[in-house]
Length: 78
Image (cartoon, rainbow, N blue to C red):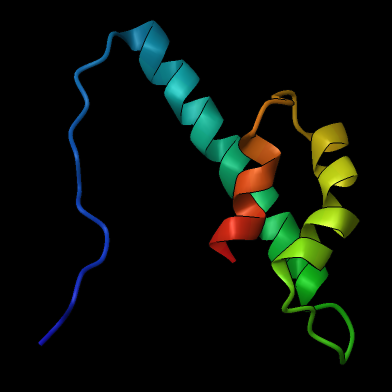
């Protein structure tokens, strides 16, 4: 039996909001991948969310245009 943790939700948004939403998702995915790549560099794997946030937050902020809470989210998702 397959367990699905994510519930698909259809959003009814206009084309401008759709573009903004897709851009936000792309930025989040970029930030999440950056954090994962950082965590798995070399032979040592960083597993502390706090350490990952301390070590990647500024880099993610510098590389993404949204500087709100978005860069904090990837560390929580890893």
